[in-house]
Image (cartoon, rainbow, N blue to C red; front, side, top):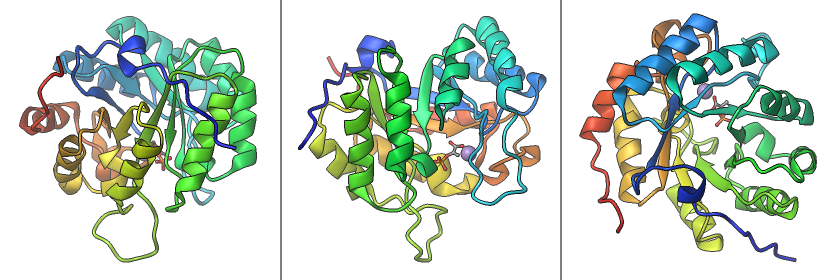
Length: 266
Ligand code: PEP
Ligand code: MN
């Protein structure tokens, strides 16, 4: 059985004036000052539509920083109040969803390590039944398109209409200069299955290193992606997660200035 997706166009839930959706922010919310200051500087660029921040961090191995959890949610409220920008947070359990919504998080995303697990995705879908919130779904860690498709079918089956895909590249086990191999054809194939689904490129998690962000972001734009999500931190080298791939807000602004972005569609 194939579930048809009743996707509401991106422009109906976030105003970008026909430009690609730009989401930026730290891999993780670390402290109140780090989050608020990063959000302020990103807002000042004038080109960012949504701030991202990881609150619950799904680390592959234990012992690394696993996110500040609920303690970070009031910081998000403050950063929202100061910038007027909506916030996106990763959720992996019904409890995360309940807390994120309680504190006014605007957009939820499902991470690559969650998309791989249909039980997990179904729990998320069930927790979102009757809730009108945008949900972005990252591709699963490994190149298994059906898991990505299935996640959208589960969310759509629970009545979620504000859906988008985040393409963050794949762990293939093969040597690559990138942390996660883009395998662009996977995202193109997803788009051919669900043509109305907005597609957002995540060059940060593809690259793993600042040096490769520009080329990956440009490729996404050249392939007509609907947006980008990029990790940005006021002091990237001191970041508690994904330090090598984050950009200062100023460097992110420069990257945006140099990106060749397609013309606004009329
Ligand atoms: C993240 O966005 O910080 C993250 C953990 O990403 P992914 O799920 O793509 O690994
Ligand atoms: Mn990250």
